[in-house]
Length: 101
Image (cartoon, rainbow, N blue to C red; front, side, top):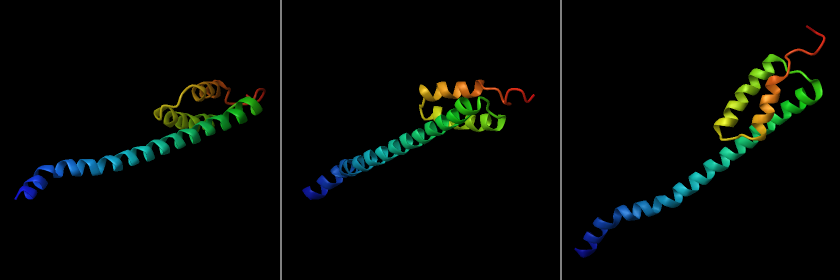
């Protein structure tokens, strides 16, 4: 009977101790995925910046709309700093090449 009482009183602790490593593993996987997605979004912002800011010196409106969506997701994943600065510079570009208005 003592064994039965021990099991009856201890099972919540056993269940919790079994789930802690599982939760820790899942958390690490979520964080790795989040960091990976943020890195891909940052790379896209940099690619667009290099093409339109450095090479073409203008950015069509459809690209600005697309990069705005990318930036919103990047910012939601706590991306900031360089990505924010590049985004702001992209958005400040004219939408047409100079001389074609």
